[in-house]
Length: 85
Image 1 (tube, one colour):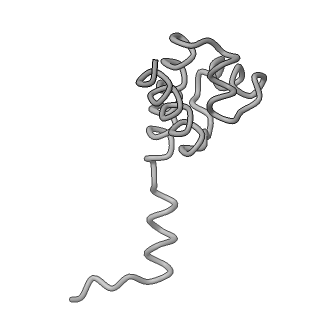
Image 2 (spheres, rainbow, N blue to C red):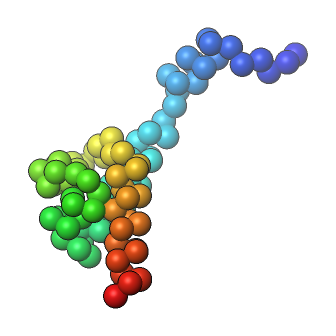
Image 3 (spheres, rainbow, N blue to C red):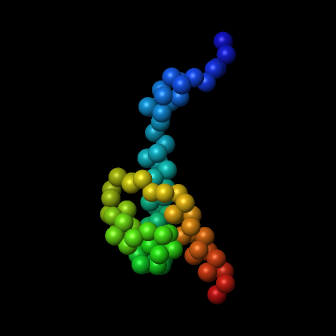
């Protein structure tokens, strides 16, 4: 029997998908590390987020949905600026 990809199999996989929470926790940890090192104001600026949004991300015990691009942007900006000291 062939393992054919169908709409129903995709829908079933989405319903059972649990990686979102784990991915969000990892991004939340990365954001927290930047805040610990650079502070809320600079981290928010580097990530392209409002300080209030970043503060909410930090306070939530359940990991919020954080855009990966925002986290990467902040990490890359800090890395670039650290290298050019």
